[in-house]
Figure 1 (cartoon, rainbow over the protein chains, first blue to last red):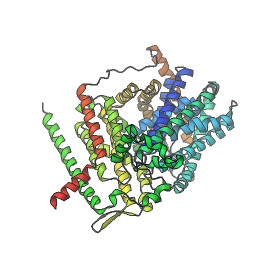
Figure 2 (tube, each protein chain N blue to C red; figure 1 turned 90 degrees about the vertical axis):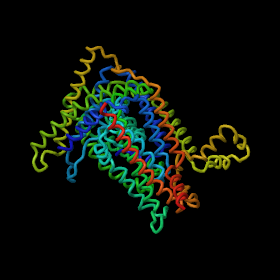
Figure 3 (cartoon, rainbow over the protein chains, first blue to last red; figure 1 turned 60 degrees about the vertical axis):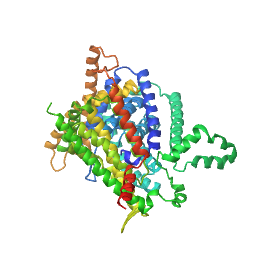
Length: 343
Length: 270
């Protein structure tokens, strides 16, 4: 399930963009380093294959409804994590641009949910430990099924967390978890069975393909850990900065810092850049305030500015006038263009 | 079956639209990508109960649609197809947040409905902006812009390859689906086992194709880079246009134009 721009706040979107960009950078270097050129067209064609396979629907036994392939696990098994991540990221980019699945800001979230979890978590932790180097039909089937299920569960959980921290939707955390996880368990099992069957099919027909990816290279243990630590740090920094900037009460951070350190020492930086930023922020409240559920009751004391009848009336009036002005503007442009055409 | 082919046709339509030659299409892709990103960030950065301040942002998609000669009905249809997820999650807001937020005369509206409409408006604006970006720029140009802006080359090459083979493989898949649906009656034959063998065969053929492509590319001197046919260059007036839009977005972000207008009109009337 794709995360959508409309539900993402800039802080969450940007944090996960940073994470996804880091993973793309890491995977690109990895692919360039230790793979032969043959992989590059292979990745491209496999990405297109995922689209094509998604167009073949099948009926899910026992339900009468129809489903299609997600494809993350197949890619991970055939290509290995870095190349599979790049391929999935490209698939998601095309979906965001052409099919309006998700959106550009949520693209980072989607790459993380649907790419990172299956490729970098489920594949090494489950598939690799079950299958190891001993390829057999049963091992492949069990490994692929379980890791597809885990990957989708984590991805669904990712959607829940992102939605929750963006605080655009009012859904309470646990209700949303209870909605998402069981549905995605069912989807994951079907996806897992189908992925396993396809991988086994390929293995039977062309065993060398799977052997190649098994023996391709040692798992990149140490560098990946470093990269992940760096990514985590970057994500936290970006998220933290943005959500500080976002707080509508400019003294939010100040308040909590002074609460924990004992006030006066921090009085000094109130001039210069800090003060300027605070003033700017006070004036504009550039990003929405994230009323994390905990602070909600506190904030209830001073409700949204729009609550006064006067301002909501002027908002409605002004909004309608703006809309009319926009329509007129559009018609005007069209007129203008028509006049230009004859030349 | 018709759905499958129409999805494919969609990419083709988008591609055709993006090959038009209008003022908007001729602008440098980098500036369009940057403008779209700035636009989206400005729009989603509003509080969740904001509606009126979002309205003026429609000016950007509107202007591009008109100046770029984009088919409005087609774009709206694409938006509708993509809407379910945002609507599905957003529809809970009215149930969960019933505190009255807006009161106009006898009418009152709960915070939940306000934020639901805000989600719908955000969805329309942001997704619309992404669709318009591709419709006025074209996929290749967007990829080239990404590379120029620092995306890893392997990833960009991957994006280009994916797009190129999308058309080929989707054609192949839709032929397979047509063949299957002509041979399956009352749902027989559309099950998982048939699907697996279809997808498996498609995969095997795909891999053979990849190998042939690679050989053919090597024969033509492929060295891992794809060279653009037309070099990108930014002209001064394009920068001015970009800065104008950027200033407008930031201005609309900082000042709630409709509310100011509304207050002014109210004051004027009374």
